[in-house]
Length: 131
Image 1 (cartoon, helix red, strand yellow):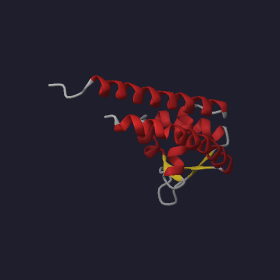
Image 2 (cartoon, one colour):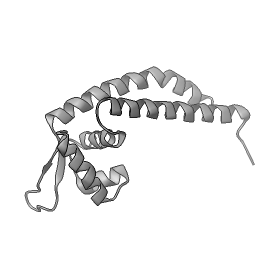
Image 3 (cartoon, helix red, strand yellow):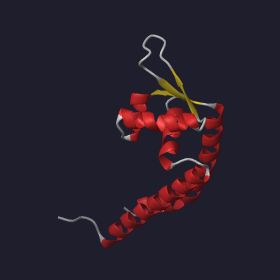
Image 4 (cartoon, one colour):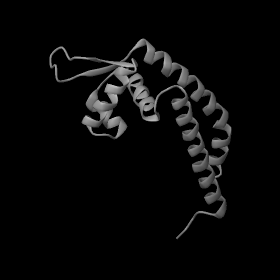
């Protein structure tokens, strides 16, 4: 039984298209700032977690294995965007935190993303209401 009309499918297709356009915008913004989209996602995750995150937590957020995440963190450290902070009680629990440079870059990206989301919000709202 299909309770979706042609208009519902059109709305779903348009929503998916707009989301893909936003992701493309986001990817271009990250690359234009000198980082990869996955590095941007890592910086966002760290900032959203309160400013520091364990490598294992970051791996979960990025849907990666911890060893792959460690390689991503190494690149972010080399770029000067994050630093490692050894755990006080357990030195194996390494926290990753943003550097001032990482915070500044992320703030710049967040501003342009917020502007883009505000721009497309009316369209997305309209499309969702069509469902």
